[in-house]
Image 1: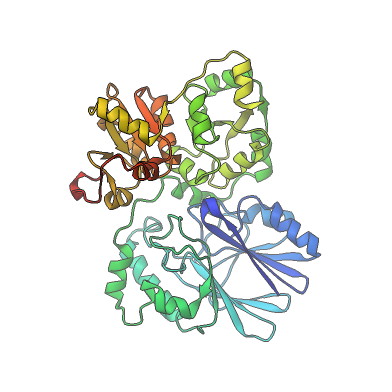
Image 2: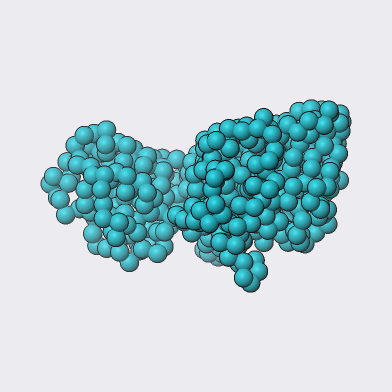
Length: 473
C-alpha cells in the first residue's frame, strides 16, 4: 500500500493518492488532474475512485475531469446532491481498493455532506483517516460556510452537528491512526491550524482544543464559532462549481494560452474591460508596469488573493508574467474558479516597452529612507495593510490599519491628495494594495520594501504593541 499526500502550499491544501495491488484512489484532487493520471500510468494501476470529503469552497476540485479521463467513479458522502453522475455513499459503506478498504464515515458539521474516509490495511487494521475539513491538525472546520444551504441551518446548529460527529465517529478510533486533513496553516477553512499536515489521532486528542474530552456541546459551539472572519467572496462561487460542474480544464488552458503582442493585448484589454493581472514579483513590478494593471505575485499567496480582490469569478483576465510561467498562472487561477483568462502578453513587459507603450511606476523606499522622510515631513501618513490581529500585536505609532482583505470597504478613508507610506509584513501585500489603488487614481502612495520586518529591524521608527480595539478596521 502506498499513501501520498500531495500538498499545495499556496492553497494550504492536501490531496491524497492511495495505491494498492493495481488500483488507486484520489481524495480531494486539485483542478489540474494530469499529475494523478501520470502517477497511476507510471505504476500501471487504474484509478477506481475519486473521493470527495465535501463540496469545497476554497478551491475547485478536479473530480469531474479526473473521472471523465480515467473512468473512475466520483464518491460523495450522504446527503450530497451533485449535479453530475456520482455515487452518494451511505454511512458505513466500504469501498475496496486493491487489498485495502476505505469506510465512509458521515461527519456533518463543516457542511452537511462532510464525510471522512477511514483506511484499513490488508489485515483489516485501521491505519489512517482522511478527514477533509472536519478535523485539522490543531483545529476543526469552521461551521459557518454552509449555513445558507437551507432555511434554519445556522452556524450554531452546524457546530452542534460537528461536535457530535467528532465525538461519535472520530474520537472513539484508535490513538495510532494517522489523521490526514484537507488543509493546513494558512487556509481560511479554519482558525488555528498547525503548520504540520499530519499527526496521530492520539496526539490530537491531547493537543487539539476542540477534542477536549470534558468539553460540553455548548462550550464547543462557543469556541468554534467565536472569532470567525468573513469568508473570501469567491467561496460560494467555488461551491457552486463543485456542486454543478464546470468547463474542462483543457479548454480553460487553451483559452488562456493565447499569446498577444503588445498592440493586440492593448486592443483586447480596451474592448473587453478585462482585468490586467501582473504576476511578477513586487519589487520588479514597481519599476515598470502597464497602467491600471494589478500586481498579485505568483510567488506568494496568489490564488487566495485573486479570490479576495477580484469579486467576479467570470471576470475576463489578461496576464503579464515571466516567460514560461503562463500556463502555471492560468492553472492557478482555475484552481479557484477564475476560468476566463483570455490571453497573455507575448514577450512580457519587455515586449510592451519595446513597442513604445506607456508604463507606470510605484515609488518604493527602504525603511531607513522612510524614517528620513518622516523626520522632514511628519504629515506623511502610514497605512498598515496587515490583518487586524497582526496590527494589534505590534505596529508603528500613528499608523492606520486598513487590511488588504477589506480594501474595497475602506477606500473613502484614504485621502487621494495625501501622501502615505504603505507596508505589510514583508512587502507582498503592500504592493497588491498599492497597485489596486494606483489603478483607481491614488497616485501618492509609497511602498515600504521589506514591510514591517524591515521597519522593526531598522530600529529608527517607534513601534507599539497596543491599540484601542475601536480603531481597528
